[in-house]
Image (tube, rainbow, N blue to C red; front, side, top):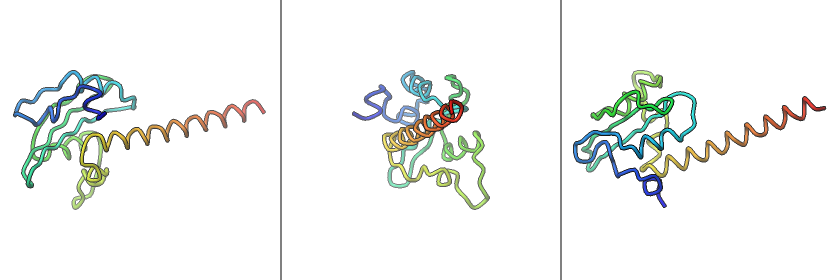
Length: 134
């Protein structure tokens, strides 16, 4: 089952059909992602090199910016949350978004990284407990 199917997120909710609105299912998903600081929802729809991008910023479970659509919306969102690059670099590539072609791919990577972080936290906690009890 895909992430969209599991969460009820419509296909390209911010760029499809010209209506820009943040679906409640998407806000609910962003609220579940437990990260300190802002969570970005990024969307790009391209065919034959022509298309548009959109973003929304959620922080603390609240929509704080967007949804906004435009030609360079993703790079704007990344700048908004502090991704700094040199003049000849592209924020999209610097953070590695060029590696993923659809939502399920980046979400799988997020889950992998989250699991790795949880394992590291658990190991650190075990080390802390063993140090303080010895």
